[in-house]
Length: 286
Image (cartoon, rainbow, N blue to C red; front, side, top):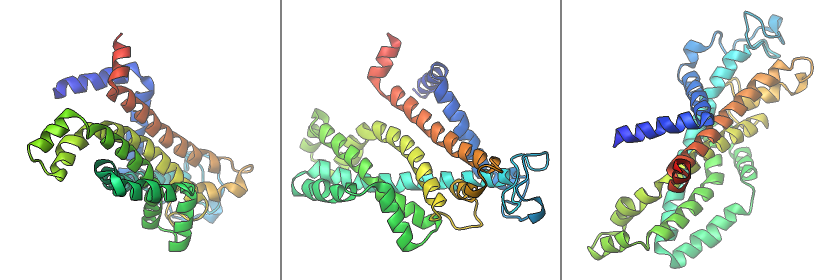
């Protein structure tokens, strides 16, 4: 069975070059995040005022910023922050969304009304990024606060997806059979419902990571992300604003890092959606 799944994945990668590109980019960013101290040619926080605003050269492949810091090293370390935020935000948002969505979809009634009508709509009334900005501005910048802020603003999408999937699955015959055999609500949810709704959640999580990377870069660009001297792609873009025309390399490399990271998650999310959708596989086979 596992061999068939692996063969299907390899065949899908061959038939979808964008998925292969996305996976390769994600592996590249993951390697940079895990092995940043060994891959970085320089200390990302080391200052060199005599070599400030240097163009790309043999000593500094991506050039230096306004404080003489090596942009390549800071870009590599920025991958660590972006991936930590992406994984943490999606994991926390998905956990909250699973609990809220399962409760609303499984029990219905006043629980569904309270969670879906009042709680979710209250969070949807404000744009997610504005809610995150307000939270970080109140609590202060920092990696933990950024993760909590983005999770608070992003759990609603997962909760609504889970609610809809649970409401559709709970009426099926195998769930009714489990209830007739005396299975508890927790067992019905964990053993019969959740395994049948996990596929759209995986796709949503992959796309949600792209959103989290972009949101973290936005907060860091506004000065509400990880405080200096930590390297973040958004803060690097903020530092480059005043040197956009005289030192365009300061903008180009962190912007390309954000773009490629977001594209990798989107490509993988699209490939997972096609692979897990039986109708898409049927059309592809035809």
